Image 1: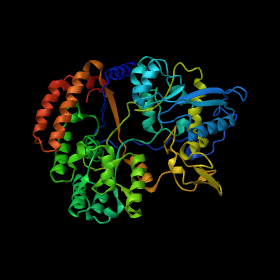
Image 2: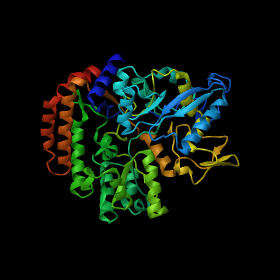
Image 3: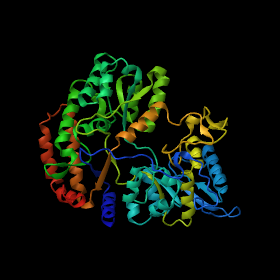
Image 4: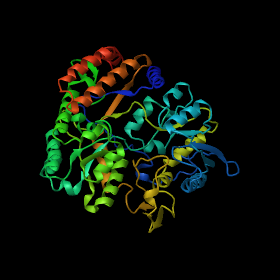
Length: 511
């Protein structure tokens, strides 16, 4: 762990990106089914007076717990109501806390929060981080959360295998939320007009995906089948595994290499270049911003979009509001070939989440808040909102009000094991397309175990990445032929790729 942590911190100080280790192409997608527990499926798990609810403070002397979360402001009505509800419901279990939400520092959250903590200005017990945590962990500013997780009842019950792996690799940051891997979707009414759609669903090969893209353009449904917001990452979520780009690091010619220089990557870029040449990939995919990409989809200029689970639900709601109920979205599977799955998910560490301030004097109370919010009661509060405002109870069922779409989870956004029984949900929190996306994520999730770039090798890594970005963009847009990939690979290796061979073998073992 010391060695891995040293790599993590070195990378943080250098400001580099993560680079990851992928599994073999023939490996099956890891099982990511929810963990079994006493609180499975949102059971009531009433445990007052047991170890599940350790005593915290007293009615006369509650323990103050300060929490800082992005976009959660203490003067907002919903936040005040949430605070009061948490304090009241925890007190009913003999856990007396005085929860206080702190105003986040001004400026970019991802930059301002690490600076505030570095300067000793972040006095919160729990702090949500969205980047910038690595260097602070190196300085010993965060509490190791694994002992708390191990003793937990409710947090443990809603963790997935991905969560567990990330916590084992980096025990300072915890985040229980849906995967952020992009999932492809399209309009159902358009799919019904395409002969290629049923063939794709029956056998989602790369060729059948191409045929779907081409038919929707040939029939005049769209200007382009697909666009993106600055890179091919959204396309990669559909096609990486099919071409054999099974992770950030793959085996080739008897050694570990970064997949960006692999034959599989070359084959994939050649396919993307065909999409571009044939007018199926929007030429503006490199320059469009996310909102432009989405607007083109709503306006029918593009036919397939790839977004996260939460984004997909938003896309579906807005698409129907703009084009009617018949335009509801349907989820598409990833392409299959060498393997099948969405773009591999990094499990080296969480990219965002809660840390516990190592200087906190109220660590047990702070963890009790996170644990309560993972309990059945806490999850109804977190996922559904405030009773009387965002939902009502009718015939022992939770009925959403028209204010419910305004609510969002401040702690744990995951739907894992969320199935309240007493009262139960009158309708699920996931829409039809959201549930379909969730099911596909579970079925096609691939874990990508990463390494991090040592500080002394960051100049090489930056140069290598620069060459890849330049050549891949030119190849896809037809500025350079696919033969230029060999030139890119030579420059990649000269810039540092060859030097990484021994590091990869050291970290991953002999291929």
